[in-house]
Image (spheres, rainbow, N blue to C red):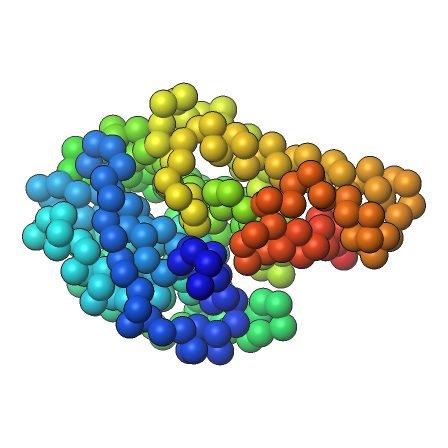
Length: 292
């Protein structure tokens, strides 16, 4: 395996998830700032607000990892999980919902519940509906705030970015932002265009967040190491630059195969070391810019 947070995006194919050996995954807790911690294991990074009132947990990775997540939480506090907040519907962020939802309400954007309840299709794979116990029981349209531990945990809907149900979460007192999969730190993102995602929308979301967060904020990405505003800004710059490079090729009448052959994204090749390779990202951009 390369890095734990990269190949685990193979969740997109349920068969790949079934083949993963979760017994070898370690879930580790690291302090971020204030009352906020991050848990890194397999799948999306988990944000955790901890205090006397209990735990607010942002995402919950895969179902088989629930005992390891609980064990990692015990290294921080003995307080119970009071709320689970999903940043979007993908299984590497919601797989533990059914387990943790038995004792704490699940909160998410309305589109997260809709896609979990109805099932979806991604990259040629059909994902069946989730069981009732895995569905969010509290949904929001624009934003919602959980007031716990003296911390305002504020989730704001970011439309048509990674998916159509993305939420970015502000831990306002601790000065930490959890971006969900609107931020892949250090590599090209997966944009789920089949389920409302959009590169243009993702760029707009990033600009909105960058205009809002303080310069000294800590930023938790959906995948990749803990970052800050400069790291988020660098990610946005890469999306804009690669989009412009493909758009320039289209304006010159070039096909996708010509752009690949000419290595139009060669200056950003280092960003293609994750699940989404450089040519995959080029196709995502090409398809969106040609409205395919």
